[in-house]
Length: 337
Ligand code: FRU
Picture: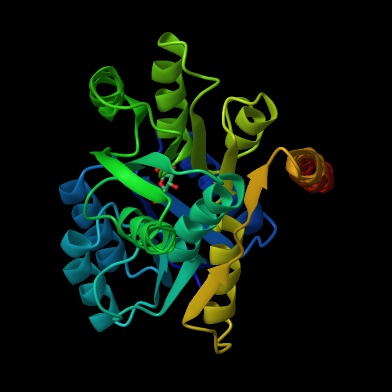
């Protein structure tokens, strides 16, 4: 329902099968929960472009106050976002981009820099000639394209380093394990593998480990999520040599939406910081994330306590109303009789 006091944000999330996107949703919900006037609705496109288009059309029909979209792929989602813009709905694009620039704002890290950071790590660690396998994200999604661009440009400047093979993945490890396994059986063992995210990097490590090559091949991923199986833990456990932090931007996206709804002018490009996480700084990063997580949990807990108190207050005031009603009734009856 669209009431005067409520602001409605519709978020079309590409999918929610992985922790990175679940974390994005969670940080959005947390930020929204701090503003009772915000109603946030998240729709999961389940990695289907057709479903994402339909869900965005639904948000346009509902006339949400702000639309946020993390597009599965750039090209097929462009038209429907232009439709939202034409309908006068301010639209924030998060993480993956669309074609062109017909949107209100973009928020996310610079993925060319993400690729460049991975290359810089390799460049600063390798003296001798070395071969590299690159494992890319889903074709047609902007981070895959941009991470490659940044990575290749930097590596190609170093004569000693060669990207010997490229494996086309789809962000999930199942898409790359077989091909990598065959490749490692048939060609020279590379010194490095750069995978466009930590999930595929972990898949690569599983293949490498099966072949007892884990001491020969250094694997670099992207995301640097905290928690079990997140990139930070993987670097800490020396499964990955490094990962490039790719913040989800969930909280920042809701903040941008708030600014839009209070008619503040906002930047069109909101670029989040990225950094390489390796054995040198992983301890510090983990501590930071643990602290942040603790604070998040505290906020969630306080929010629950407040909700409980409101509920108690509501039921108590209903009880008082009922008692007053009965008293008045008794009074009337006694006057009557
Ligand atoms: C999550 C994810 C991340 C990656 C991002 C790119 O679904 O695959 O691992 O960094 O999407 O858009």
